[in-house]
Image (cartoon, rainbow, N blue to C red):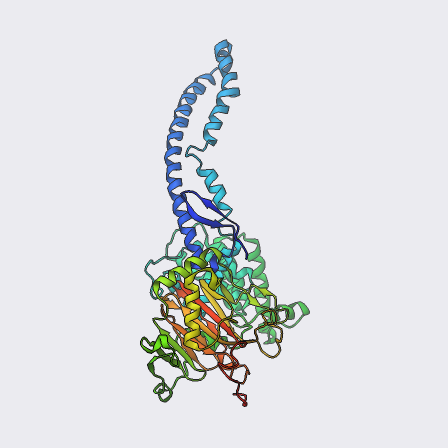
Amino acid sequence: MEIPSCFLLVGLLSYSCAHTDFFTSIGHMTDLLITEKDLVTSLKDYIRAEETKLDQVKEWAEKLEHLTNTAVKDPEEFLGHPVNAYKLMKRLNTEWGQLESLVLKDMSDGFISNLTVQRQHFPNDEDQTGAAKALLRLQDTYNLDTDTISRGNLPGVKHKSFLTVEDCFELGKIAYSEADYYHTELWMTQALRQLDDGELSTVDAVSILDYLSYAVYQQGDLDTALMLTKRLLKIDPEHQRANGNLKYFEYIMTKEKDSNISTSTSDNETEQSNKTKKKGRPDDYLPERKKYEMLCRGEGIKMTPRRQKKLFCRYYNANGNPKYILAPTKQEDEWDRPRIVRFHNIISDEEIEKVKALAMPRLRRATISNPITGVLETAHYRISKSAWLSGYEDPVVEHINKRIQDITGLDVSTAEELQVANYGMGGQYEPHYDFARKDEPDAFKELGTGNRIATWLFYMSDVAAGGATVFPEVGAAVWPKKGTAVFWYNLFASGEGDYSTRHAACPVLVGNKWVSNKWIHERGQEFRRPCNLSEL
């Protein structure tokens, strides 16, 4: 079992782990708030101590100012007095050194050293970049404009927060570093808009326009790029790059007017023309991106009223299981093909808190199985942290496993351990299959328990906005509800994979999403779910 490299911080945190990827788990980010609050308290103590120290330094400066003003009127006469000469040597050799020590001294019993130690466990550049990309992902998925995000007008928020000109500028720069000129333009434009509205900022219009004009040009909008460059040069006529760009843009426009075609009169110009693209989001690697994001927004759900009428809620006795005859569970049909059912009030708040407490110290960046090598690795399309809990570790986990077995009628002794996941900023898991396809024969070879026959998914928190589980192949969307669980079969009774179960965890827009899931495997189900002769 992997043991995290953690240490105790007296009076600060119950634990703190030297790890990165903070942005991938809201649970771990909460520790950073506690750390920051402690540092603010320490900083205020430091300020009070520094103010006292500055009073001493001011007193010293005023005394020395009077002395030096007198001395420099006639330096030779002043130093002709041996006591003055001695005291000058003493001051410069000893007393100024003491003053230097006073200025450099940490008067607050370790604020600087505390900050230095804690910085080792702060988010790094990867976290900041990951958080920025999460905001861009949320912007795209939920069709949010930059002004809505900048003003914090998001659904379900309790603590509204605003983005400054500097914040917008940094978002644009991160997009620019990824050659994502579409988002560069959006956020540089927002930064410029807020600056033009009178917001005070350390970022000037020249810096914003420099990025913005180039991002617009890279998307093929030469007229706007030229206009922005001219605006920049009105502010800073000597700007070297802008002057060069202006000449180049005007040269291209002249050529276009002369030939009535895009820049193609030289190899260099052809290459430059090929770089420019129409405005819009960059090309995407996910073919179902549009469908997936529509479902995340609650759009494009393919459930007709006629099909909807066939979905029911019922009390379910788990196929006559004695435990559930007198106290049946509440079962609701979420979808018909594939059949997805939800169980209500199936896990208590006390159980949820216990599972979260067991998982929290072990949360690590969630991984996926490489379909070619079978090796577990992190991926940009799965933004969360997860931990695995065994039944023997705690009675609560054992009871949960037994409950899943009783309700599904499937043997969980060959199932994977209970996986607990906490989603971070824009936390998501893009469309994927839980089961191994035919071109992945070795995906679960090490387990020796066959393919993943079914998925059981607990929702352990409500989510203020976003975070749905969607099935793009069939147009289904299932929304998180604390204390419930959803269940579906990944394989037909014949053992063939059900490709309609391709699903995704939508980005969390507002809130904190905790889930846990159980992947149930084929072995042990031979008599519990007999194989069919037909493929379906």
